[in-house]
Amino acid sequence: MLFPLVATSICGVENRPLQLGDPLSITVSEVRSWHRPLMVMVAAMACLVVVAGVGLVVDGRELLHESIWAKPFKFAVSFVLYGATLAWMLPKLRRARRTMWTLGTVFAATGLVDVGFIAIQAARGTYSHFNVNTDPFNQIGQKVFSSGVIGLFGASLLIAVMLLFQKVGERPLTWALRAGIGLATLGMAVAFFIVGASSEGRRTVEDAYGRPVTLSGAHGVGVPDGGGMPITNWSTQGGDLRVPHFLGLHAIQVFVLAVLVLGVLAARVTWLRSERVRARLTGVVILGYTGIFVITAWQALRGQSLVHPDAATWTAFGATAAMTALLAVVTVVAARRPVPTVGRHRRELALRAG
Image (tube, rainbow, N blue to C red; front, side, top):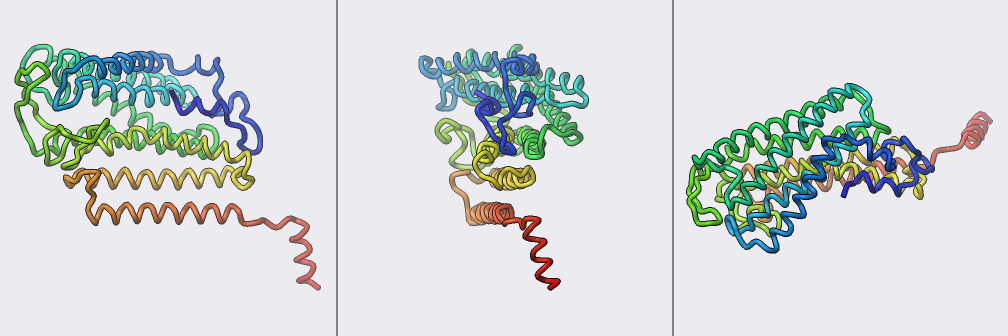
């Protein structure tokens, strides 16, 4: 379920197995110490994954040619991953522990409210996003929903800022967590531009029961929602800010996974046992991934589909890939360069003196 759990099988940073208390080691007792309100949220989201998964199979109702349960399912999976990562990370922080606990609790509460509203609207066969119908439940729900989005963003932003002033384990992990939370916050910020980026304004569609629903806004940029890619439903006709939103939100899992992989390899690759080398390679992953995040946001804002990049987008992707590969190669070559031993160095000095 979580990337941190993979760490139970890691052996090998600095040519030794992970010890109890290491930032990436996981034991049953440590799992119990994870942030409890966040774990309650994760458990609830996991239940929703099951319920929505069943709904995808047995419930034939649709909204914009997509199962009504597709959105709750995707949101629940996303919150399981992100919420569990926060629940694992927050207890490891040594400064402002009470503040961090409070921020985690705010995130858990607002996450439950927001995704709960999405699930209820799905069960009602109607829209959760952009729905401006005047029935009392929807009007109250939309106000709570909007406030929850701000709460999620605010809690993540404060956690990201506070992470800048403390270290979590070795440098690779610290960099991964700081950059991951930072990009997750930017990914949430992208959501604020989704409504404003749409040129569709207000339009009337039908819900799962054929009832008229007025939507003010859309996920697409320059095109209406519907008829997107399989599974993600990202637009194939125009820009879609859900792409950078997704990439930003789950950057932290990618970065922590990179740290875990480097830790596993360090048991077998001598030059990877240097913390500095692993930190630099983690930095290369962060730079490359951040470049992709920026490019997809720029692409979406120009009204361009992810699957139909133009020459400018291809050039940006190519430049990012080339720069990332170059930095990786330079880092590896420098790390593998043999270091003269003290004895060899002394002999060289003696030869030069003679």
